[in-house]
Image (cartoon, rainbow, N blue to C red; front, side, top):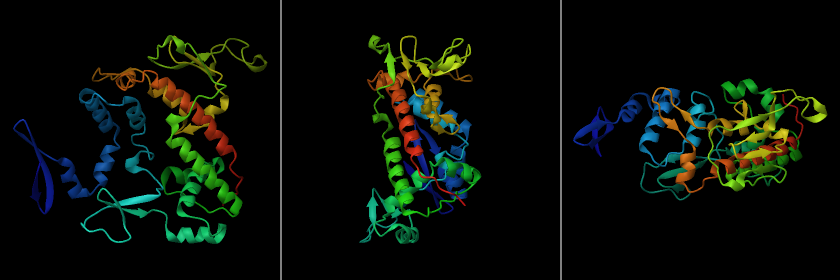
Length: 325
């Protein structure tokens, strides 16, 4: 890998099979900074192209996770254009010697993203024991509050949302505790075990390949007080494949909504075998499970997401009632 300097800008050049390739990313950064590159990466066509290339050239490509990212392309929730509230932010180190009070890791300097000003404001309101991590988890809990999301719905879609400090110290600490539990739950979602009331039948056959998961349908009069209609979806039951059925899924599991759809339905939709119309390439999430020697990964993931959904709904239900101005 070599570098050439054009108008005081370093441009990467690599050689493959006697052909020289110039890095367009370096050229674009020199002209428009990182904005143009990040905007390009949000484009759905770009992500489709990257996905196809990865499937052809990368044997360890995780199509299931990629499909979730691809579906968010162009939305404010995609990292390239997201609104986020990190605990830390990192600055690339330009000098070789680090300062006495700098936190660094792999050539980057770590900075607190939560200001000293808001820390002092929080200490004044809620007590001297408040630390910046408490504020971080407070924000995560706050962003899950249904009334907050409804009140500031327009801000959450278009601009930096307001993050008010609640009046009562007890409410603040309730949000902190809820945010900490939610963060642990969402970060470690794959570790969540199946709930006892949720049952799985047919898994003893050992056939975990999935084509397209679907809900079962009701028959006339089926359901509580016989109100079921023929053909109506039974969301308490998911047909995983012709052999495996998941039953007794509580209705509230579908109350955990991510980008307009329940987390459970995202998994059902994205972990399905599909064929790309233009290229004819088959996308099979089962390949990743087999390559990682865990044939029931997709089933375990779905069961974990059911658990995460129910626990999330329970935690959110315990958040205090707050009047937002």
